[in-house]
Structure formats: structure tokens, C-alpha cells
Image 1 (cartoon, rainbow, N blue to C red):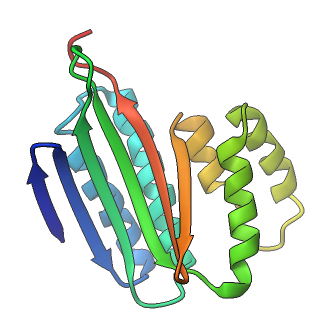
Image 2 (image 1 turned 60 degrees about the horizontal axis):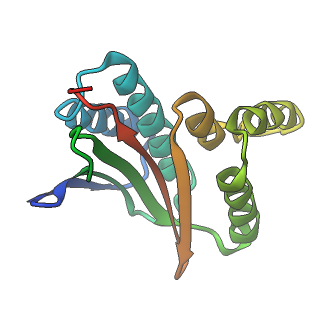
Length: 169
């Protein structure tokens, strides 16, 4: 685990092998870390959902023995004290999956109505023989977080981000 505290915010990175047994502890750690920045139960539930879905994906689809989950908070620029939060996962991706994953994530990111996109993915998942493929769409719809991805040198990073509600409205 790497922890950094900077004037620009706080950041922690967990690196671990792709084991299903690490999904729950990674999720709990992210949620606990974020509870330092918001005590709002609904917001923490959204963060927990995103952390779980991202952790599950990074473990499930890793092509090597290295997964990472990074959580970053940065103070907002407004006077209300809002904090920006991002959760980023990274893992190696199979070359044959790259085009399909990139197309799906691009469609997810550009969807103007995340709820409609999620509903469409639910209908599509009924046709799949393995996995639902709903986790990332669920983050956009149910957790109301934005998603961005980046592929480089055989590695895929996916970031879910949001602005935490201000404690002082």
C-alpha cells in the first residue's frame, strides 16, 4: 500500500494479486478512506458500490499477477469546500479483448442517459452465457459517477469519479 498526502489532496494505492478474496477488503478500505471526506451515508454507499464493482473487475479480468486500486481526493476550487474523488483500477488486459472493451467503455462514457444505457445493458446481459457485464454501467447509473478509461502498453485503467457533497452547503 502506498499512501501520499500532498497539498493537492490525499492518495492511496493498493497493489495486489488478482484474488477474489481481496475484493471485499479493497472495497472496505476504499470506503473507509473516503469516510474521512464525507459522512453522508448515501454518498458512502455509492462509493462502496463503485469500489466493489471496480475491484471485482480488476481481479476478474487481470491478465497478470498485478492489480491496483488507487483512491485520490483533491480539494475543490469553490468556496463551499467540495472534494473531488476518483477511484482508479489498473490491470493487464488480453490483447484480443482490447477492441471490445475499448468500444464498450467508450459507449458507456459517452452515453448521455446513464440510466437508459444501464437498462439496455440489462436487456443485453440476458443473452450472455457468462458474466453480466453490468458493473461499470451500474456505477454510472446507480452510483452517479462518471467513468473514464485509458489503454496503454497492454494495461487498462478505469476511473470512476465524482464531487463529494460539501459538508457546509
